[in-house]
Length: 532
Image (cartoon, rainbow, N blue to C red):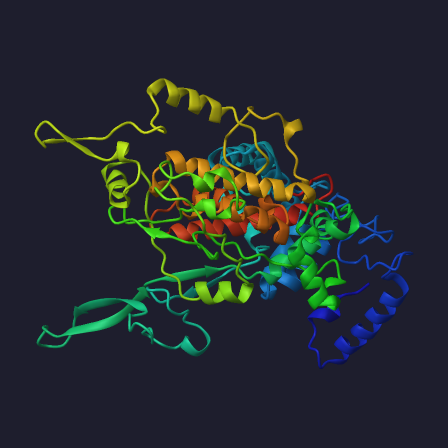
């Protein structure tokens, strides 16, 4: 089917005729026997391209790829023309197997699969160039190869930002030179001597922006996911393949929050290809919790976990090992989404560290608990002695703990580089909803036991989070699919892209977009699996 009409003006006859032709084509071919639409790269009974179509000696979808680049990612015609040229020009005169574009894509696939460095890949390109005929068009460096693929990139936008993060300089603020909130300048200010006769006057000119946001538009990336058959299949896994028995949580689709959205927006929920985005945050406490501000450690800590225990639990009656008093309070009522929003609408972020030192022990003395661990003056008040705590390790104990952690094995994206302590057969990503109550109570007990031995400074918001994890599972599904750790680990990958210390954000974004383009292109090559 001819698709050139898609690029025509919408008021033209060519566009009108193309729409009518497409509608007729859809009525005849768009659905399989089950009534399912199959033309968003989902695999169906109708092939997406003619199986006899061969590009550069391959049964590859080069024309489809360039068409999709033109529709979704690139708005400049010369880029499409350049891609088309690279897709048609032979790698060397007489070559019927590879074009310049397919050769670069295949080689980059090997680079990504085997983890080759840019330096080694450049050396390989230079060696292959010497081996081929003299008139070959193979790039001779990683830089030149990426220039070819970067044309398929989904792009980014550079948006100027207030140095204090009050506004983005776009829309109604696009023409301003100062932030209307804090009056900070948008640009670096350069002063130089005026060229007038006196030579004393100074002239101020605008320099580079003080702060820039590198924005990667999300819509083209969604289109890229659906353009790849493998990824498109994953996007509807929760409808097509997931087991739904009502007892186990396997996916966020089993959670209460997902089902609530389906009820609120039934038309949206009935389409399996519709996307739902989760907000990933870190360092925010959206819970109705009791906190204590440490005077010496200058930290906000969260104690009093006995409130979450059963009314007659024996820990509630203990005094000395906790704060010196029995616990009669009850767990706070969970907040609604509206109440959480009102609490976090204006947030001040405070950073700090937790260590067992003199300030931690002074906080214990200030609170009047665990007298044995209070600082003790010795040698006539010249030295301060700190009694060893239960969590203070000897060198042998530290070695034993490190050896244990080195051998831990956990689910993917749970943590970094911990192996072999837990057998894979013992791990289960499917959650039995009937065991959640028991798991929740066990978490309360563990936190109370930690309070018996660790200083208050240990109980920051991340430790207190254990109280709320089970409720989070009930509402949102398995935690490993929605928490921050996988994204924090991916930040390490992005930091590795930074090769220019003076342009860190630029080097990260440029390399990420290049890798993104490579991954997108591989979905159109036969015999090449796209990277997950």
